[in-house]
Image (cartoon, rainbow, N blue to C red; front, side, top):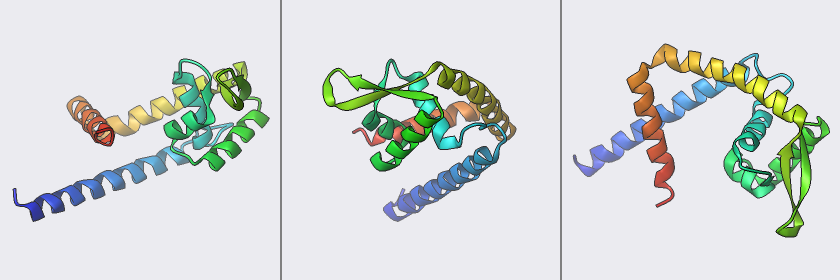
Length: 148
């Protein structure tokens, strides 16, 4: 394939991926599944639910794709709601780690189950099983390409 047409195709693919992500993310954000959270707060709880233990704020920033100041404000809100707690970091006295409280675990599970059902409905209405597998694998390849 000529270099110019490969560049054009790459840009068309990016545009399609970007528009699909924005469209579906907007639908998910508007869903009536988040109470008492907003989607970004759920993202933090989800990241904590999949972690092997308490995480540093910098680790959460990488997972949730949020800046350090934004994450600090989000952590403070979740702490204020009683959904997470800060712990001393045994490896670094200047840092802290965060984990979910029992209430945070319960909220994450409840909201996560509703969100998961909504995701499944949205994805399954447009894609069959083979397309979902291909999409998953393609996106994993794209995400992993930055590691090289």
